[in-house]
Length: 208
Image (cartoon, rainbow, N blue to C red; front, side, top):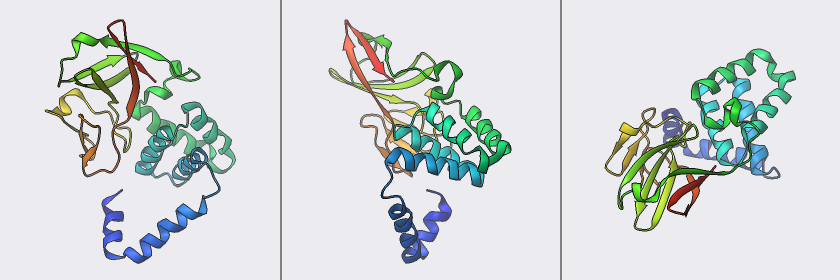
């Protein structure tokens, strides 16, 4: 949420809470993916860059695929027009989200061989790259936790050097995360995206 909305919630809570309740109630008969797609289209129609970045990422977290998002924007062409769709594509390309890369469109979710189990020390955090994606891996004994390096706010790339101890800080808006749990511990309100994983034949496999 922006500083401006935080301010309005503080000084005019009755009005703002009523507004957010109206927004929630207005889509009560829609499934989560449909609501997420409508939010993305709305942000493109208004050409709100921060909102587009945020709701694009929310849609992906809600299970909407990159192909579905592209189809939704193109289906809204009569109201959006080409210029707004191109505007959105420029931002999307700048974000460089792996799911939207041409070679990944239409691909089914699958397992990826990331690293040898023994290369991740106990109680340590490791940064890894695999098949065009960057990950942070935390190990606690035999348990692993594997996170996307993208901030859950606006899918901002969080680089390796943003890690200090067990704290990961997004360079864009300063959201801080505890990589031991994935929880957001400062500024934000959503955890890191966590990937399903398994260990087979001494290799850590991650699914995305």
